Length: 289
Image (cartoon, rainbow, N blue to C red; front, top):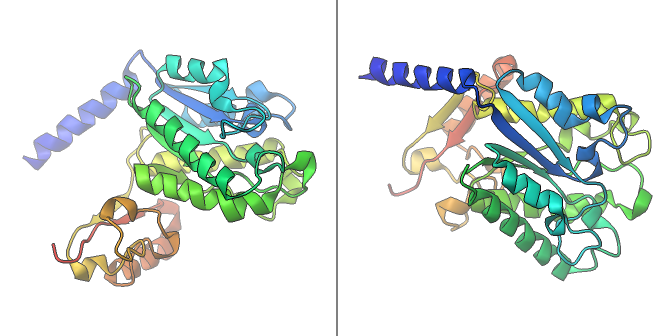
């Protein structure tokens, strides 16, 4: 039975990769996605580089729009643009979202109400994309670091306020969260104007997203994913549950994503000894089950 199941999966994967219809990837974002900061956006923007990394069988489209924000009350809301309608008409199989940098401007972010609106608008975008006939897998990306408060953009607002909201959205909707902040943190050499990455920075963003795709087997290559199922011995407070329902625990607290027991020990030892294999571990133990 296992051999039959594996054969079916292999055939399905082969059909996906050899189909005349490419896997469509839509990259939603602002000027950083668009490619401001690189000499040739058609070649060096991160969606273009991602397309090269994914290779044949994939079609990556850049839906970046400079100065756009997530919030409806902001100066240039993304969802009010024709481009957002174009994203939906494209019927993507995979979507990446990187919006929030311009929401940090003083005239866009004023108080907690702005933060609540950001979360609500993010959830609405996700729901609308999920409802598409293509039912795309959605990857939500943290804003990249900002090294100068140019154009009114503030890194402290993004990291202190928006990144936690993005994590909440990912947890609530069971989305893949891509940390595009950490790989670029401290790399001000890759941001000539302090805001927009150059070609090397765009390539690093593309690599980070590609790695996230790989963990989900969205690159057509086998993913090394290990799933733990069990009771309280396995659970051991993964995601810092604190009484929260299981559906809200993933990505709730990334510092406790494995729990504190044997799953944590296995994950740490394996990832430290074999980082090149890019293992991803998932703890789904639930106490009392």
